[in-house]
Length: 293
Image (cartoon, rainbow, N blue to C red; front, side, top):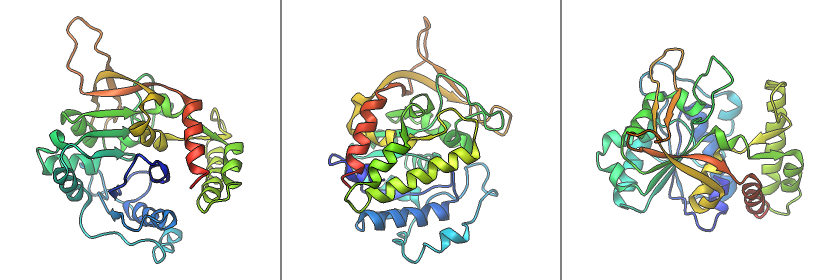
């Protein structure tokens, strides 16, 4: 969100939240807190899906430490994320890019609500998936954002909407170090030091939770890379692909099957996937904007 706000070529029209690596209520409170910190008071935050499409019975509630922030955060607007996404795209045909940095539940629901959405959205940029490798944990065989709601991800891929997927193949290569965090902390701005402190805390958390992980003394910039490709496509190389997803609750939940269209009779491409990244160029872009915010 901060990177999108700092980019002079991006206009944030709408922020929606979704169940994913936190519950949707927490995501909404924290989004409202970031809106307050960034001075984005004119942008609506709309709460989205509390659970995946096929498991509405599985939902979570906020922790007390997050609820304590609610009074100071910008409160969410009324309505439902899927409805507001569909409405906004249809009100501005061909003009809106959706950047999805969580599970795709809201996007799939919006596509179901409005059959013309896929034709009227300029593009959907997704942070999600892994296309040229496998996950290292058998308990989560699909990349997290896809694994949480593979049915929603499959629906987006089937929709025909123009879409680019920025997966772990590239996002794990763009990392913030402790020195990068200190550079943000030294910025004489209102947001940079906060971002630097949060980065150091996240690196420490990663070391504690996965002490044996490679590059453990840094953190990956998954979501910001998806934001950056909207205005800086030169940072990432994309290739056409036909991607399908293993759905359901079996041991391969969320696994992506990538066809790079090299056979004599290839399927029709349904997306473009990130294959390579200019990691240094992206990191400089990120730090230049964050230290000025």
